[in-house]
Image (cartoon, rainbow, N blue to C red; front, side):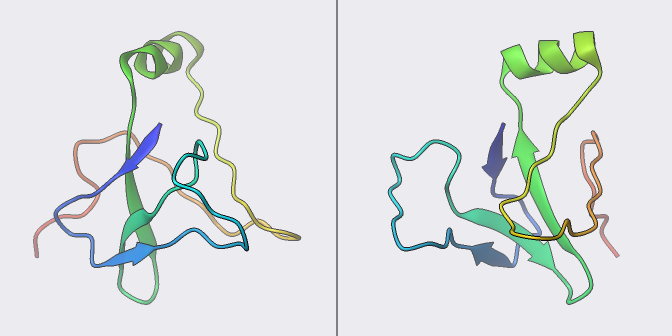
Length: 84
């Protein structure tokens, strides 16, 4: 899966660490929407990933963090953010 930009994104999180290369697989800027209470990103699946999700019914989420797991929410939908 790849993170994608979306209509309501209002911030971009940059990869951290001493060494960063755009050629490193899976490490790239993350477009998000944030209102100070939540951070929402949008991800796109390849056809192979879509078939895998359909067959196995699972999505694995990993965070690059040291000692704790922040609260997460995952959903498959056309849109998460709705117009007010």
